[in-house]
Length: 137
Image (cartoon, rainbow, N blue to C red):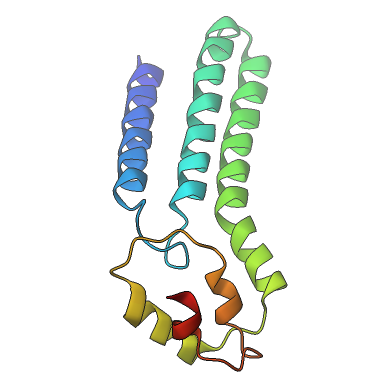
């Protein structure tokens, strides 16, 4: 009974997460990675749907139940963390020389726009001599 309540609660939380990702889909990608959060939530939902029948099958075998439950928890958490932080780590590794003033200026000037263009990162580098606001318009 408790696993069913926990499963239902977890699915509701995942559903709310997907709804929030849908609502922020038009925010510029420099401010939010909704597509990665959505992918992480979707991955967790897939693992949860896979885990429930497996756990039901091995309910009487406590060691197998514990191993599968632990593996699924580790898989859910690891994939969520990787999908949220790996793009940020890749971005910093690729463009490690961000100029904070350019980022603030860009956010102030374009937060009302609906863009998902990732080429804007080129204009936010310190080595970029030209004004990025002219190059992103």
